[in-house]
Image (tube, rainbow, N blue to C red; front, top):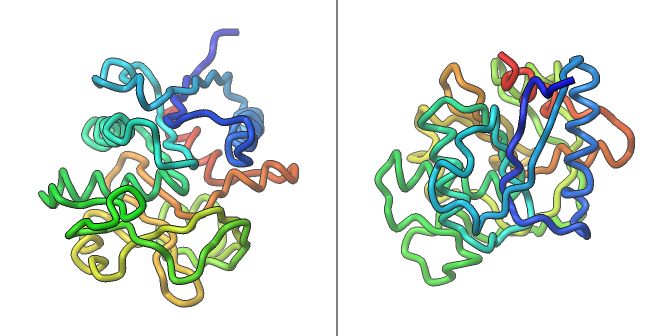
Length: 231
């Protein structure tokens, strides 16, 4: 059977990264539940120099494990998805770079940076978290009416993390005034997921929902992503 959908996994594959182990499991489980024939391809960031490298995919998932070898390649892929209505999911590093791409190309903040890569940046929209979330689990609450709330069919969940950087609260109000919206917050009110307020699926989470697949559990957000890719 030919695949119904093909997903581009944007990032630099490393077999030792738990999220990279989990994502194929999450996708295959979701595809089986949806009765979709699925193919996916790992796309190293250094191969993304023009949109032609990622233009034939039905959806793009920007992966954890950054800094990427080619930040510009990851940002190009995210911009392609956003501007062309290609279903997009970003997790961990994918969240961080989705925020940077939006800041640069929608808000015109060409100096928007990631503090891990540019520690002296004037506008670090992604900055070091006050409390590291490496191999941590925590409760998050989903915004009513959000895509992520619809995917999980609940208003909260316990999720896993492996990150040290997140949204800089200094720029929150300007970044998330619309159409980029808060989709999830933690118990302290810190942003843990965002999504675009538009018909095309565009969701990014600082947490790693795919990690549930390592325990044999379904990943609702992966299923919602694939469903969007198939329509």
